[in-house]
Length: 454
Image (spheres, rainbow, N blue to C red):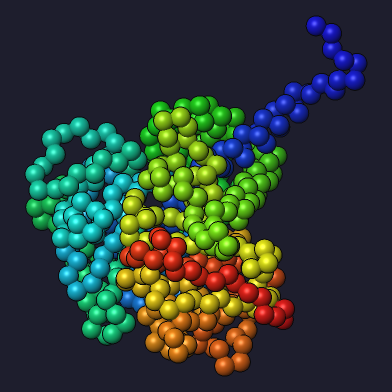
């Protein structure tokens, strides 16, 4: 076959470099769930001094210092990591008496294994769950709900839902937290004393770094976890960038430069996927739920025909610890543009009108995140407003007007959420225990309206 005289053949060095460039970006997109899990685990060890099975919780709903992807700053989170390499782990969930308890047990791929609370196997009545490692093949003891993990690492993220903001109900929610237990099955006859760590006010930096360190995290998780059949082709591609099971990862300076650029490109793709997705909840509004591929697949993003690694990457850039049955207990709506379709920017001031009778039987919250991290805005004095907030001004008809901007409009300080000048942001409206008017679309949230450009 003749070759065009104008063809410019690639040199061996060109081909090697281009192979690393291509495959590093795809590796980052594929590995986002593992890297997200590792970043949070490192913060759990480093920033709050926890060990596997220690229960971290918030005695007060968190502020900006809880740097993880799209947390709810209106609830008392419970978060702990475990590792099943040495055998099964028991998680005791108490009956939800005096407060609500909901959340999920999650594997290293950020896939929910089981919900706890009313949507879980315990149905809110409490139970002992037995988390089994992927290589477990012994007889399962009686008295447990078994949950077989495909990974050795995992974590749990729960929310203690108080019935009201009263001191009594807050105390009841915290008392429920102190009834959760985590310990190895091997010590079930005499469990060790449970360690609880109140992490309110501590800086918890659990956001992944999008540079060469991204691939250091990815390699660490690849070494720790079994290879799933669905990932065999990807493992072959990872070898091209120096990540190989059982071998040291030692990229040279030139490769590190490529990896740094690849991580940045993957991040740009995650942000584009997150912010450009649009399936409006109401046809004439900008508010959209997350991509339904996650919810429909139980956040595995796998169907009979494909594993959607792109949608999985976007989702894990922007969230973690999602429940298996999100639509039954919780609805999220995001907005990236104002009423005119212009992207939201932190130097401007906006308002949103929340009509009365919000269809959330437990409570609702409005919270703001930075697009470039999908986390709470660092140093923000106010990150959220919610229906528990007694200081927030209500209108005569029970509706609420919320303001977003770098400074609170005069007289509206109680209804203001901070945004950082020059930084893209997005608000999230959460409906806990959503009610029919939300699904029937008879209740409607307004779009953000720009009221000034400070």
